[in-house]
Amino acid sequence: MEQRSTLRSPISLTDADLERRKILVGLTAEDIGRLVTLRELVTQEGDRYTEEFFRHLANLGEAPTLFGRRDVLEEAKHRKRAHLTAMAVAEFDRTYVEQRIALALLYSQYGLDTRAFLGAFDHLLQALGDDIMKRFARNADDAFRKFMSLKKVAFFDIGIITDVLMSERERVIGQQQEAIRELSTPVLQVRDGLLILPIIGTIDSQRAKQLTDGLLRAIRANRARMVVMDITGVAAVDSKVANHLIQTIAAARLMGSTVIITGLSAEVAQALVALGVDLGKITTTGDLQGGLEEAERMLGYQVVRSNETTAHRSL
Amino acid sequence: MEADAARVVIRRDGDIVEARQKGRELAQQIGFAGSDLTLIATAISEIARNIVVYANQGEISLSIAEKNGRRGILVVAQDAGPGIPDIERAMRDGYSTGNSLGLGLPGARRLMDDFEIRSTVGQGTTVTMRKWRT
Amino acid sequence: MAIPILKQGDILIASLQAAPTDQDLVQLKDDLAERIGRLRSRGVVIDVSALDVMDSFATRTLRGIAHATKLRGANTVIVGIQPDVAFAMVRLGLSLDGIATALDLEEGFAWLQPPPIAEAPRGS
Image (cartoon, rainbow over all chains, first blue to last red):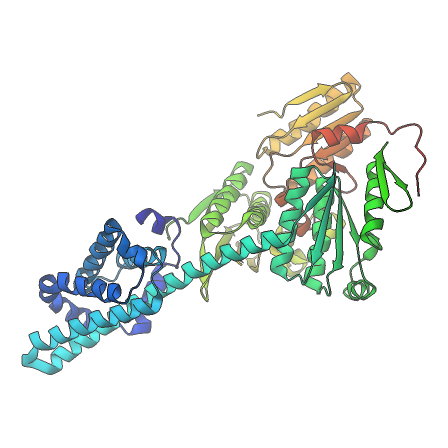
């Protein structure tokens, strides 16, 4: 866990960021002064609060994998206990934040729902709050202020933990989207040195990037001197994507491969010209069949047509 | 200085390689994908080469950038060289003609998302550029 | 470290290792010029597959080497530009200015071979 949080912190940890977080919850030196008076209470009752926090989650049926493994649960409890102590030591420096992040990453790894976490946290605050009012009952006003200071720390912590959980979730979603895109843009090897890339559907800039990566790597892996890129199935192309495709073709050429575009509809051709794309720079043929024949000819294969099918044999 | 950030002094061509390799490493830690790593390394190479050729010595600092929950890489190249008298002209793209006189600047700008340059003649130049993870 | 140059028939092969220094490239140009003259080579294959970055300087320098070898009567082909590198070069706006490129050594050699004398008739 430690290794992970130093290698790739999911949130930024500059001194400026830490200060900003404190400002956002209004955490001042006065608050810190009040928090340290809670040290004794936390030392005495910290274990109970920790147990209640996790019992609350267990009762909700939350994060079964977290509760299923004794060593992981012990680790989480240990960190939570340390957290409570740290709140009353009241040094909200980078170490404090890194410890919050480490705990949040643990929660994320075992699929703890953010809402459940917030509920349990609130439950813990309630317990602490009740005890503060009881212990400092002689001066109710003072006790209340102590609790308000504690609440600021709670929001400080929640801010960090929810940021981490969101960041982790985005990361996982990103990976899944990546995998889906991989599947939806196949590159097919037709014969030695020739690839077909049929593109279907809308291309956004994310997908265009995916296409480029996939195609250029496929050219290398298959040693493809020629690529037929068929865009019959593409309805519309915006300027960003058009530029990206042009760049892909240029990159393929630098690698030593030639790209032929097929299935360029009149509409898309007009749109490209209107966007300022120089169609003369890219080779295009009408349909996929024509493109394949052109490619094979350029590769040195002789194309022979019979009545029903197109047969090919090499020179 | 944040963890994982780096500072490279740029004096000779070997330093250019170090700067772009450190840039690549940091970008990888931030989570950039394969082709972006090369774009970032190439942009760093361009501005580092600029320092070696025009300013004799400078420094490149690399760190994590964050804005609105997005993460990226921040590259700052500073030198105490002669400065650029006409920044606008220097930033005009000379590349389409394969112009060998071109400074690395317009190229680096094309590869990165954010690009700022400040320069004072006789004092030096600072280039700040960022690329954001998608 | 000097860039190694191998000879295969009348073709020279120069394999660039990762991150060549400026000095290495200058040396390469001189070495190639010398060898083309002495060995009467008619072709040069420059293998850049080990390069993880090709910036404007490297591109200009390789262009210069290719033109220099051409002046000495040898055709040059650059092989092995990696996918990410090729894309970065395009984004940067770099051009190899008419210098031939090929996927790898084998394709490079094929390109340097003289074309067949008789072309087979095309079917239609």
